[in-house]
Length: 446
Image 1 (cartoon, rainbow, N blue to C red):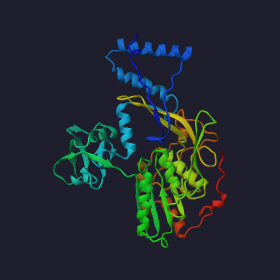
Image 2 (tube, helix red, strand yellow):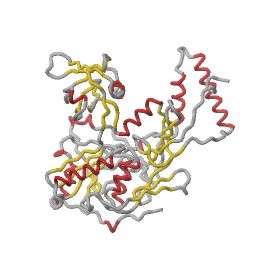
Image 3 (cartoon, one colour):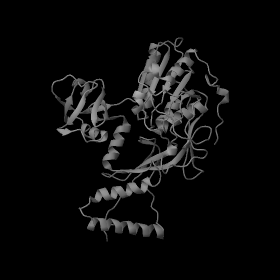
Image 4 (cartoon, rainbow, N blue to C red):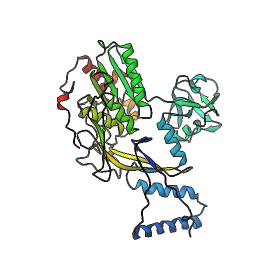
């Protein structure tokens, strides 16, 4: 018997997840015991022989675990762009990220040309208490130079078990010598929701991703706005979903439902066309019918598209910006047992209330507003991509659409989509799409 056949992979039940960054959602599934056909059995024998030959004859002794992980990942990646294998470490990182909390230092960082720069320290975290400021360059982490590491590798070195120490060497503009700072990791809770009152009459809510606490954070944001802006002054709300890559299905349903009193939000259909899950809104609009505008762009994907499509089909919000990414597939995370990794497997497609799929098509805005990208910010505009541009993507039911821009200016005054939303809410601009007519809400197709 070959060394491959001695390896045993334990199957475990999994939880259905959704989006580009995922954690457990609604449905459950597991690995079913099936008997492979003769051709499948032959191919498995071929794989076993290939791995045996590599194991015995490769010029250097191979890492068995790395070989098997790559084989599993290769099988999954051959299905579609969103199915893949996560080893134990990647699985744990995914759970930490989507839970909205992790052991770390509390700062936003970015890697530019091999330089790790602090964008902003978070309030009341080890980073802010140690005096780290925006613009600081992290040169070393525990004596290891950052140069040559990827952003992900640098983040891995700074995250860790709460209560453990990490030493950073920091280069600060104007300082004569690097600063050595020792910090103690803490549980960092990251809110994906930011809010403010623009002028004194428009509530603005930015949702960066659909992690575990988004619906609760949204309620708190709406309440905070209501506490500072009297109802007779507040003209409406802007919900910004631009460059939001997705997240949890249940959070997308709750966020959309927060602005609806009834009606379908999304449906999910798997391999069996007779098995359809419908998710509907419960009574209770957080903003009591106030006008609502949702901002989208080419970086809005997955759960973001569920929210935008539901509010558009139900004629609850006017959608402003550019066409979304077009990811309308549901992934299920299936753990493979203690100490092992997990599969991220595409198991279903989702459909908007009208009954149409967004797969490789995206949400088209009611008002298209394209942003001017200044020459000196061209490097901030990623290459335009969409679901339709990904090799091996699930095909669309209709004509596929290309991607749209994802650049968002840092200065609100230069943000054409945001300024359009504010002008509509304040009445200095008119458009037939605003406000939407509820009597024209799309008929739900079951």
